[in-house]
Length: 420
Image 1 (cartoon, rainbow, N blue to C red):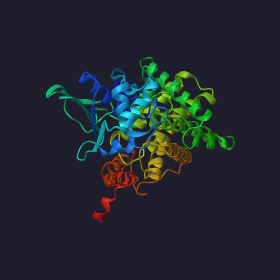
Image 2 (image 1 turned 90 degrees about the vertical axis):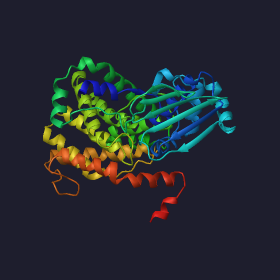
Image 3 (image 1 turned 120 degrees about the vertical axis):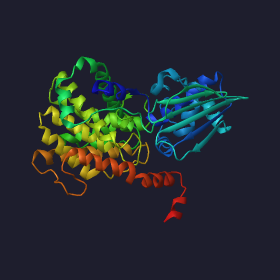
Image 4 (image 1 turned 45 degrees about the horizontal axis):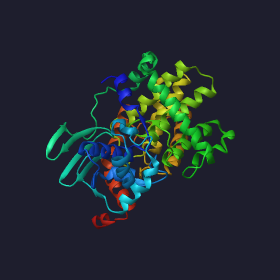
């Protein structure tokens, strides 16, 4: 898969936090396959899906949170053909009916272990009829559809949607310099429009803990705080149930917001032309995707760290920084903030974005001044490729138990203590 195809695959619009929306999408497909409105729905979900969908407000639902409304609204109000925009334009007059169905026990939710980190299985029942839909590895990656023991669709299950992409900083920079921007212009225009609109929304109105608005009060003293404020405000709105879509990165709206908004705003404030902005966004998005490739879409590793590194590399690209400075920026970013945990999608994501971007901006200044961390400084290796591999190993394998403990604490089940 080449970079054009990978960007077209990964930079897609999503309406709401991608985990509850993926649940809603699976539920909508199950209901459509069943052919009638279900009387009972069973949601079998991986720990990471439960963690990320547990606490976040779902757009189109007037501030309702979490898994139950995602499943039921998807089945009864969603449009399966819209995938990650499944809950766009739902009939809000029927939300009270959704509440009643949940209260009456239409939904059974089960945690399933031993599956991919991103795993959603929805079973919809009506009388003796049933349908089953499984999403695995990617938020819209349906791997199985069944109705009444007849398999309608099946493909090989995958832990992650496998894409053979040959990443390196050299190749990313060469592509950013020389690619045919016209081929990517449509999705980049959407990223600029959608992601900036939700940032403005977050700064104008009250969402979550209003992190972006709080930061923006002091942005006059330090320019980069303005960039941090806009990205954080976008997350405030997205996690707070805003009805505005965003263009995602690495399967995440927060990562799509973080990697793009600082680059867009910086280019505008510095009067940098559209052509250079497009190429900087290509650079930023690809760097973020590169950093997440070995980690996976869902883990205990907060994706704001990698997205922030991508964003500031995009800004470095706008500045005409050397490859060595860009690589140094990534090394410094990873050496410092790789320990931030992901405890699901919710209001505090905006603060984690702020922390990650601030660290990334410092990492850029550090690299420009010739003070990049040296090999042997903790997890830092002789080159960016090896350093990224270390971070991937820590996130994917080292933080596996951390992920289990985080979810256990979120659902107040401390059975893991028996193991210590």
